[in-house]
Image (cartoon, rainbow, N blue to C red; front, side, top):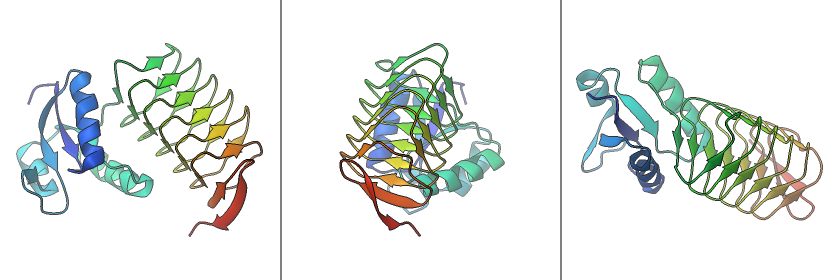
Length: 202
């Protein structure tokens, strides 16, 4: 296979979005992979047997599931290239991990660091010196001010705003439209303006 070909793991709506971004980045979609039987999709076993070492993009929005697939894909020797949509504005000093996807019209400013398997969704703003841990999902139009830290597997909801220097713990969920003005611990869900913890996550 050519170096500009890759498979999309996840034949769903999110997978189609990832495929569009991959094409915009110059890739040719070699095929689809799905663990559930779907018309036109290959099984994982078919890909590892027939296309060893093929590049793969993860078309799965769920953070824990994406983390599991990332480990499986990399353990089998398949590269997971980062995908950055051409309309995104990214500082040259930004560091982007393997398997991370940066969607259209997002902005990521100086010295931000993004781990592996991160999703920065359409129109999100990640300001200078932010740190996003592995398998974080930043939803559309969310805004992170300078120096924000988001722990592994956390999910920032659509349109949420985080003031400068706040720390969001691992696996924490920030609800849509919430305004975070204080640190949040790991494994909680917080909503509102200002965001308040409403439950602990299992």
